[in-house]
Amino acid sequence: MSGSSNIVAMKKIVQQLRLEAGINRVKVSQAAADLQQFCLQNAQQDPLLTGMSSSNNPFRPQKVCSFL
Image (cartoon, rainbow, N blue to C red; front, side):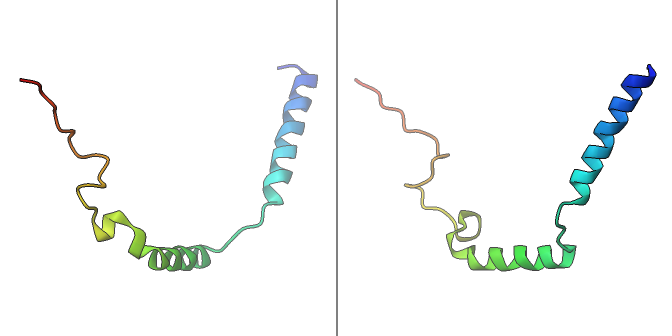
């Protein structure tokens, strides 16, 4: 690797590090609390928790129509 390409690579690394340093961070405890609150608020609409009627289930096996 030549000297000029090494400098270009290092400038890209420094630019990326500056970008990452400017990102606002959220504490894990706050993110977990927010996620828990979201799950509790939307539990009534969650088909994994409440179940799904067979007529609305897009994954049920399709009925085969046969002509006699």
